[in-house]
Length: 258
View 1 (tube, rainbow, N blue to C red):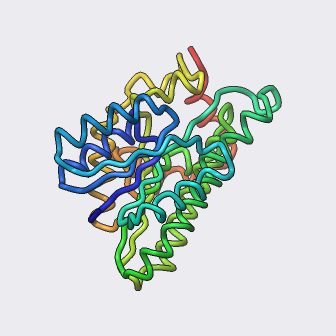
View 2: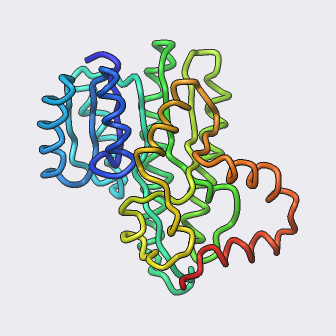
């Protein structure tokens, strides 16, 4: 395999759209998701439509050992990963003290720990080969605290910070790391996170448009990518100047259901 991208959360939403873009560009794919049936269908469809090689791994990144198994499987198959796209992630709505701790721990495992583990396993080979691209799907949520989604916002703050730090560390090796920070996106995220009725999802952008934004930013080696110019301006230039209590109040209001 050449120019191979490993994509997590690849069976739907942004992950699926990113897989399509990479395949359209002639790149081979390693697709990771929980549903074997969906993966098998995608493997058949994408290999036929785009004439690329597609390998699938049904793994749940909530399992602490999943990232290691994924890496070992690619090693066993002799697959070198040129592009790593850490897309898998989920949120959850409600007061932190009222939510199940196990759900929050699973969220941290998927959104942060497994992402970190996969990056660690695959970035070593990229640096050795002096070539590679990493795209970590974060969120505009990473730029402020998130009442009613406290843990989710915090996990995305980690992703954005982590991505920029390692980008600086490996910049001399032709390996780039990009954090994609979209606003609300029209995917299964809303249903999975019990976010129906939250106002900001009324104007959610399409997964396809967000994927194109992220993929182009990754190709350019951009540090942080936003899919909405107004959000980029607000988060970079307005929010940092506001009093913390104002930011918290505004953030909470955006998450309240109506």
